[in-house]
Length: 334
Image 1 (cartoon, rainbow, N blue to C red):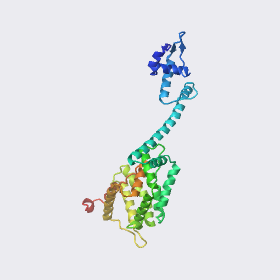
Image 2 (image 1 turned 60 degrees about the vertical axis):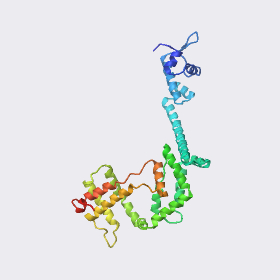
Image 3 (image 1 turned 45 degrees about the horizontal axis):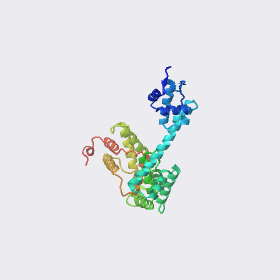
């Protein structure tokens, strides 16, 4: 512990150059333990350890003044690390933003004006992003009267860029921001949703009684998802209770003051199970590339980085079938 080392040995032990060791001594960061009458600098193991710490901190981009403060006891390593971690996170965020813009430029062969726009989009605040999405839905719903609750559901599906987005999330946000800013896209989404709500089964599905029924089904739907996620057996008592609740809701949809609704029969349950399997197939259908609304939803999912949980249609179908044991249609489905 009391041995002294010449500057060449110190350089080899610390991985610093001889000139760097001299520089840190002259700068008052780590002084030699002693200097010989001939002017040779000698260092003990404590000084060598301090030089190794200096090298580590400098490799982490700590400034010389910060290093001097740590060695002098004016700042702790934890405080210095916290400061530099914050700076590093800012640098990472800037690099991710630049990568997203550059990737978009390569993909789109963008003009200078588009590059400027993309850079602005990446730098938007949360409030600016929310305002852009709100303006989009305000224009989409202008000129017709979509059901208020439908509009609330559409507005609720919105991008929420995390504090530390990946480059892929930033790229998705750039595309989404450009999409919702485009007048042609806004018009196309307005036309698409208007057609969905006003043609075919649209008026029935978006009427207040049906929307009330869909909201009433949410607790049952959540019970289905929870049971499937937990691996509950479709032929268990819990699954039977969920199947009964589901059928009770389904038959009640068509009830009127003069009619109790659809009868709860084994055949009806098996038919409902078949519809659930058809729903599973539909749920696996890729988004329509021609649908601007589908593209909007896909980009929102990409920005948020949390794909929506797939509904367990197959589990519910199995639970419905298990609720009618030994029925001919269950054993030999057509």
